[in-house]
Image 1 (tube, rainbow, N blue to C red):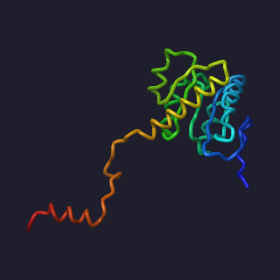
Image 2 (cartoon, rainbow, N blue to C red; image 1 turned 30 degrees about the horizontal axis):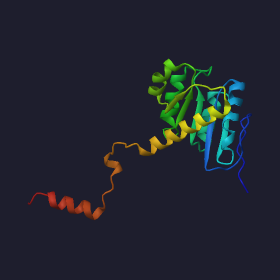
Image 3 (cartoon, one colour; image 1 turned 90 degrees about the vertical axis):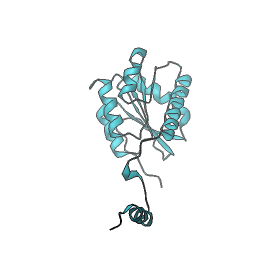
Image 4 (cartoon, rainbow, N blue to C red; image 1 turned 45 degrees about the vertical axis):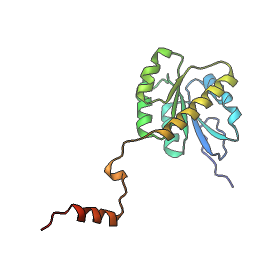
Length: 171
């Protein structure tokens, strides 16, 4: 028996999938367009939708989300601040930002977005572009090398003791 996902007053593909993507847009027609553009992933990717940032944050808090596709211009606060907040609070979630203003792409990327792309009218092409952007962001994240800290290193106790003994000064 599959678990039911809360429908946040919006459409959601309510199936248990290997992945779940969140789509955020405050314009109903754009949200429907993105949802239709991603329909080819039904059966492969579960899709959750939100029309505002507070709902998006609630979904991110309550569900395992593997990618977030969001409109840059949402009405509640500047897009850069929200992107930075999501990137910091959910660093494991690739962020694909949709914006028709290409001159903001560098700023959006520096806020924490993995990919910035325009909205495309052709649903099939747009869906493929979104899918490719998510897959590329996921691949890049898997390949990233993060600097190791002492806490990341595992040294077996016996080896640690041998090192201490080897460097201990004779008394």
